[in-house]
Amino acid sequence: MQDQHVPSWNGHSGNAWADLQPMLDRLYQPFEKILADAVVTDGVRDVLDVGCGTGATTLALAERLGTVGRCTGIDISQVLVDIARHRAEAAGATNACFVLGDGQSQAFAPKSFDAVASRFGVMFFADPVVAFTNIRNATRPRGGLTCIAWRPKSENPFQTTAERAAEPLIGRVGPSDPQAPGQFGFADADRVRRILAAAGWEAIDIAPIDVPLTLPRDDLAVYIRRMGYVAIALPGLDEKLRAQVTDVLDAAFATFLVDGVARFNAACWMIRARAT
Image (tube, rainbow, N blue to C red; front, side, top):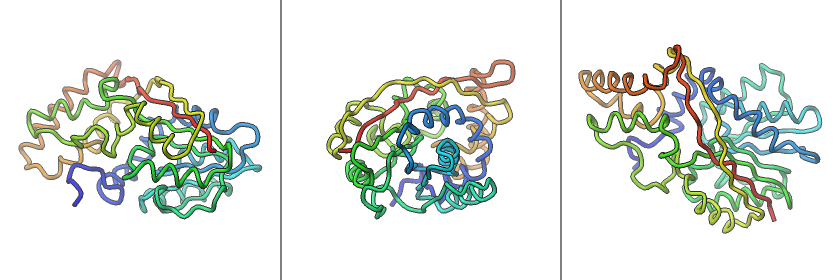
């Protein structure tokens, strides 16, 4: 049985990402260029976007590929894939397509992709070695893997503010095992190297990147109440405690506000490897 505080991509978490798609696209837009610059190089025509969500990175990669290439996004969330498909159709992005499935078990055609990309989508696999083996088998020899994942919690105070602020009131939420599938599941770079090596990838390179992000005050208030492990727990609290928790969260996140805008650093890993 899934823990009530673990993201459900066909439940609370998927619905939150769906409802907040425009806001989250604005928040994480800086990563689109970073991925496109790294992934779309000479000779790359067919790209797989793992954990594509509502399709922002898939569409950005497809736009960069232009008429000579195609980007396929895959995600386990029906609601997010539906949004991604609608966005591609509305944009006339005929070279972007979306698959409902799990990259760990999806029956990809062997050696069908020149490159694989992911923005915050690879930390949730139940068995990452199996997943990255399956993805490697779908990648052409010497095809590139480029993923962005979060560095440790200690380097991402904004991302962990809610949990720290709410813990005195509701206890600890989120996975207790730092290597469990979740937002910070790939925080340990040495572990990620071992996973990729065991899955048959080579030329593994993991480098830190720091990306400044911003959230306007009004967006921040919504983000606090809908995103993250504490937000998953909020609906289950009685009205009085829920109000206490949200007051504490508002006060804690106010420390990031400057002139009405929350400004913070996304401390991430740029993970790159090559298929054998």
